[in-house]
Length: 420
Ligand code: 9WN
Image 1 (cartoon, helix red, strand yellow):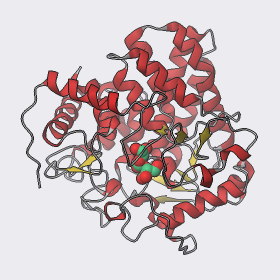
Image 2 (cartoon, helix red, strand yellow):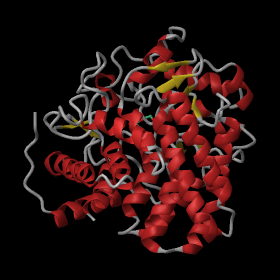
Image 3 (cartoon, protein in one colour):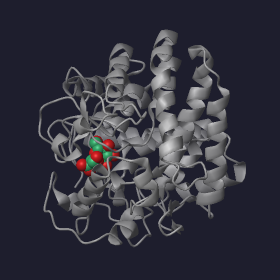
Image 4 (tube, protein in one colour):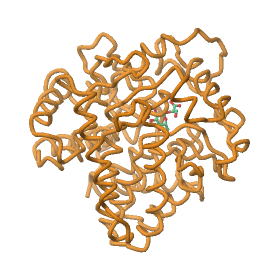
């Protein structure tokens, strides 16, 4: 049911968004939401940097530097940095980062998340002109990208593979169902959240099992390449990486670095996306079966972030996005899974609901391709969601009602950007 909220004008909405981000600031980073996610998450944090770039550049800089304190000597930027003492499962005792030579002093997870930090740094520069900060943060992001290119190119074709659903940022996307179903049946019973809104028959035990296997293999790149049972090339993850490579290519001269390797990296990703993940749309590739995963999710639009994606791919993908399979059928943008798929479920996280962050990424994609009407629809539709239901974690794409937790940081942060 739609929740009634008094009408809020743009200025009031902006104040509310800033208040949420202030309340979620711990002194060492912004938590995605109070209670449910009490630490610093990597891509959440990058969205916060983007949202705060105009309004609180000081805080945006601190946010990024605090996240990078969690970077490992391998260049890996972990998906969670544990700055606070609050309990979360899986917490430091599961990841055991402190036992690893490459890990920093601050406790972290051992997985990664979509590498949005390059784009976030570019966004910050664009709104502040702060060259000194670019110089400061740039080397860490180069190391992050080197890690992806060396340790995560498991398919050997220039794309980075995710080795866990958590690494996609879209944990329970139906795109991972078959790869998870191929894993042994595990019964741990560990829970951190209410599963009702997540996995139909809880894949959570398998998530934990996968994470512990990787940990027990010493977070080794060789193990990932040769043995790890979950390895997938995801179009959203790689579309974001490509956008961050282009961002580093543009920032490189400011950091007195060579732009060419970053531009070349972006080119390699573009060619591999088209060669390996395109089949009338972008799909994830399961490296363990060497097959495309033919379920159409919002993740398939990630490569649209690339301004140099060939026109025919842009046109076909945008047609699908605007069709009755996605935006054309729902009152609000953009369902996380195509609505005609058997797996579509408007009530479960990444299996149907709309999310502010993917709406924002698609609005960015629309902007880089000068698709002004689409960009406007995404902006207005997303603002309508938060105006009506508040800064919820996600939303029912048909009636716009809020789902998941409240006071969600990226919903607030990206609202600030959309309002500008
Ligand atoms: C696991 C923090 C994170 C987001 C992800 C979102 C959700 C966690 C969970 O929350 O993932 O990392 O418990 O499901 O799917 O995108 O980064 O907000």
